[in-house]
Image (cartoon, rainbow, N blue to C red):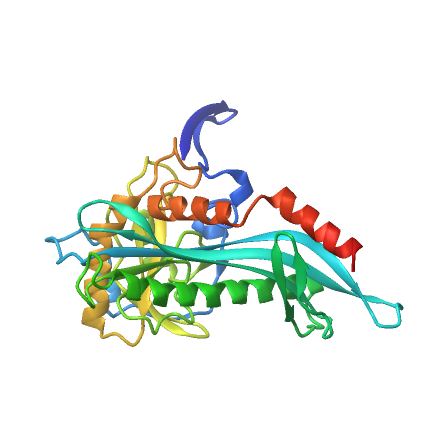
Length: 340
């Protein structure tokens, strides 16, 4: 985040330039200020840790017992080509999306080392055509995924959502495999901490797991509590609150180490399962204050700093490489289409 001062008719004013590459959007989905993001209808219980009238930034306390290892899980997806699948009578065609996707896990060991634990790669052809079969190419087989058409959404949105569901399912498999791999490798059983890049939804049954959300699409807290987020210092968090939408979870906001800027610069939302007790949720929140700031990225190395944590950024790079050369994959699809 770059801060500058400029002159105008009314004198000098301060303004902020978001440090994220514009290709990634912004940490705040609109202009970067919380007041411009859509208000949420989520149910909020702000009494989990502190009465609402006593809400204030929570400073990191005495160091918590560290986990045996911290495991970061993330996934990537890439649209290789858009396709059209003709109807049997050639009177129409259904849209298709050929995509590659992968997920993996990085283990940050107690000795300070980090390495890839597991990874999985897939290729798929997502379409509303019910008769589409798998497509074999020189770049691998694209497995057919038949998607029900949604009259309220465009085919592109429907297919993209189906791809995202498959990626989330693959991440769940990766998380389970990573947990099995780390046990006995550098951590005693049931001592690791899992950090999943993105909301914890559909994965909140995983024990000792945190969801790590970099972008903010809605205002969940009422104004008087939301203002506390803007007052957070580096390494400070809000009190834990219970949030309910189509699913329930505990959540808190945490500011990572960063240069001064807008009220929400460096702020992430962290989640844990609602099945935990309030005491357990607060303990995880305190642990996140100890651990996550260590992995914050810096501007000169990452255009999504500090929210794009270093292990996650490295994992994304490795996974994208494992998807293969995009031009080669596209050419392989062209060849397969020409010979079909």
